[in-house]
Amino acid sequence: MIVERLIISPDFTIEDIHKIREYNYEFTKDMTLEEKLGYYNSAGAEAEHEIQRRKALKQKIPDVSQ
Image 1: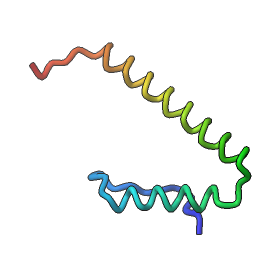
Image 2 (image 1 turned 45 degrees about the vertical axis):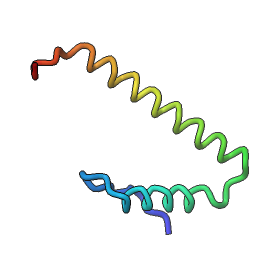
Image 3 (image 1 turned 180 degrees about the horizontal axis):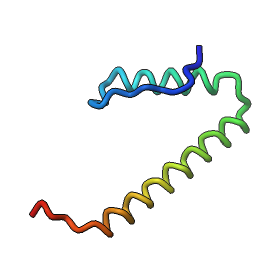
């Protein structure tokens, strides 16, 4: 049972963590080791890119809450 799009609650609960783990297991269970490495490495690279993008945005926007 693979869910096309994982739905995470706005509060990000422990149930969401379980959903993510189950989704990843179902998605990768029939992959070879090389396929899994490629999958996780590409996901990691995408996450790193998103982190860098958000850091750049944060630096451009002044904090007016002070």
